[in-house]
Length: 337
Image: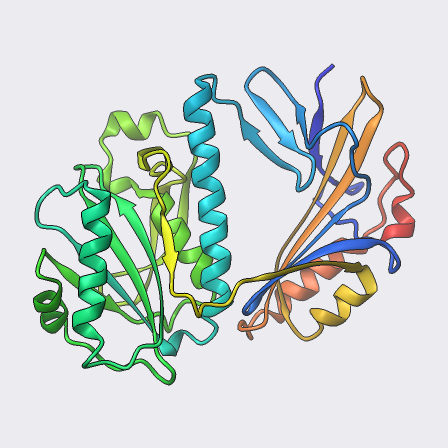
């Protein structure tokens, strides 16, 4: 019998949440303004994955359902790209705490340049030429493959105080290989999530009807237009991941960039750490494996200390977390809410 992964539902058919008791352990990841708290009620001694079907499996550490790729090498490549995206997201959030101190600069090539060594050499030369005129003190770069075969370099350039205005024509002259665009990040409160989604997704208006027809997940997302203004756009989620070649360093950063912190602590300690922060997302998943008797509850929460206008979101999620729920086999739900 396959493993069953589902959200937790209340008696009215609405999703609800189960949180740990004060003395239970949770994993806390802190990256700048973003704090993630993950609780797993039972840890497996028999590996970190469970097969759901011939095409899907679940990672029992975080409850994420993933697809098998039956071409083993490509499957490994996509897993590596996904790990790189998560690492890059966390590094960006750990450092871009005040977006006003950063500039997002996109460097493009006029021709279909695919030489990775030349890509990074060109970038280093660009920084070397720019440094005498602008006092930036840190950077994070990520590369983005284009469907036409070329590469873009996305550069996050950090300054000790508010980032100065840098004219695009000056940047283009310094770059010397194609088009350049500089943008502010003032309207983005989770830069890591925003930029990694930008690198992974493809807007629908860039796809042909046949490609859209094969899409597995189409979603409307918040993004920025060419002038840095918030807009909504429909995208094909994760469609660009398969364009990254195996072994490529997608992200690089300066040596003085901070790394996110990860630690285990009690749930009560975690509550003190996120006190006053805005809860932006919460989900609880229930995993059961009837054949082995394995059962687990995974509660995941994300907080953003830089977001100030979502008190209603906090009320909704806390209310959901405290709704009574008939217990699943093996769990006294009422003790956990």
